[in-house]
Image (cartoon, rainbow, N blue to C red; front, side):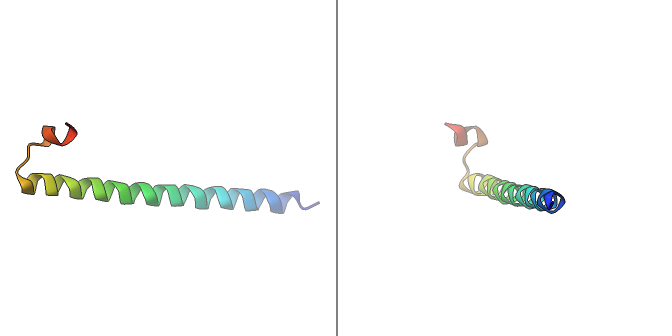
Length: 51
């Protein structure tokens, strides 16, 4: 019976998956933050960005 080992592997895999998703989200937030500076640097109003 190796069910305990399988459960541990699944829990660790789920945690690694969550960490990867969080890391990806952090990267996307960085990109979104940088795009605000680009828009501001071009002199465009922030509302124009969504049009």
